[in-house]
Length: 104
Image 1 (cartoon, rainbow, N blue to C red):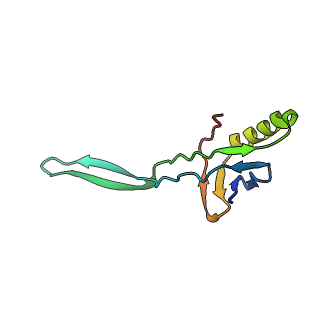
Image 2 (cartoon, helix red, strand yellow):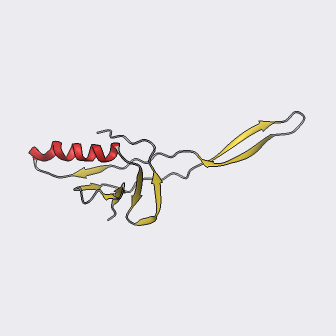
């Protein structure tokens, strides 16, 4: 079992549990390509940065029917204010969150 930590707050402590571990794609390096007259192929310059990746993490929670809206609002505010994300089983790595959204 693992925990998702958003802005140093445990989602398990909020009563949320991730239903599965997300697939984490390998980021691609950013390059600038240029062509030179009378040269075969393009030249590439490494920008030293990487393309953004997207993670999708499904969550579940259980609560009384009358408390469902409160749980949902608390979780929405956590997601909307997300700046940093990490998993409890690999705390050596974290991701900066540029954009977060809830779908369902």
